Figure 1: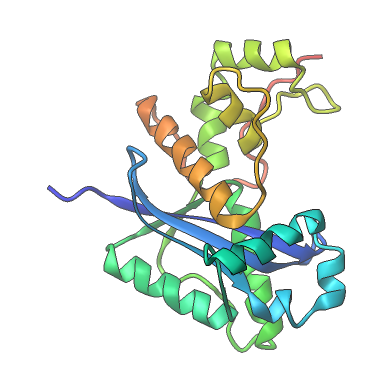
Figure 2 (figure 1 turned 30 degrees about the horizontal axis):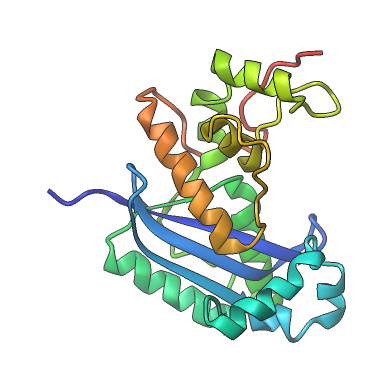
Length: 227
């Protein structure tokens, strides 16, 4: 029996968080057990090369030298947004994928759509193929991982609380918990590297064997305030 496959994507963006434009997109095809069947890593040249002023204030601008190293060693390719879109369409078709996942999927889908609309002057509005189900790994993790007593204890012990006293639920914190207290782990904040972490979190969510809402939820799960 063929296993159901998912596409997990992650983007890095320039400009600002209200109007994010994608300069890096990574993806991996995986199953619910975390097995990876295919992956890709793209620099979007429409933004990375053609918008130098925007790139100067990219959210993780200090990471930009990494991209030149990745280009030099061939671990990332520079393509247009259209080429990235077509590649993703082919991957989805090749693996018979009906569900795309991302950690904070609302941000990733908003960023890819806004980038496409800006580059095409709104001639083309939606980046991902029509009819796909979009799953939010963050929403899933908040329901079945971040509500566990051991997770709450882990966050309290290590001070992983937001300024308003809520548990931190970002991918880096959740992954540290999964590594059994590897407090030295830091996300690379490049598309594919973060995707590989998020596929593991997705598999960990499924391993809980609990009912969960996979849909995008902008407010996410209501995490209790602890102080």
